[in-house]
Length: 186
Image 1 (cartoon, one colour):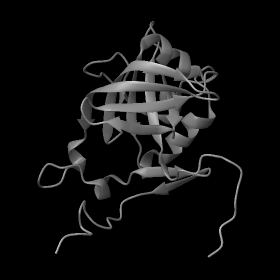
Image 2: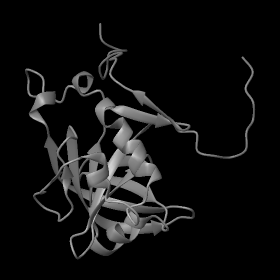
Image 3: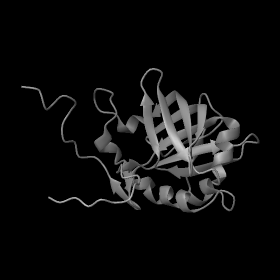
Image 4: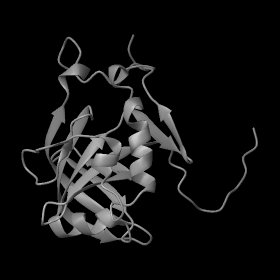
């Protein structure tokens, strides 16, 4: 099979499509759709998100040093898309998407009630890398909707219908192919 050589670019796909909820110092809330999000470390638990500085939510994150990563599902796909193409400067995204803000435990940013998993984060460092600035954050708490737990109290991915993003399109996840170490088990 032949491979084409393309110009340098980000081809690490698919990516999780998440809604990041934020709040400014006065308590004004917003949501931003982010696909550039990732796990960094287990101990302490850390994640990153990358956001363009011109985005409305960027300054809320930069000033407050806090955000919540809310995983999205097939049911939240339309809201995730909407929050990625509309600015909180112009619309109240919670009102327009009919999503419900909930109080978090450790940060002033809201959780999104309809999300199966909400991850409270506090920024520990910002890296200005080019078109996007990366916020490195420590995970303070994880909220998991009991609806998506299996009989052993583990998160059941297949129940949640989480979505991913690739080249401008959203996809539903959920088909398990194996478990960690399955390739070497006898």
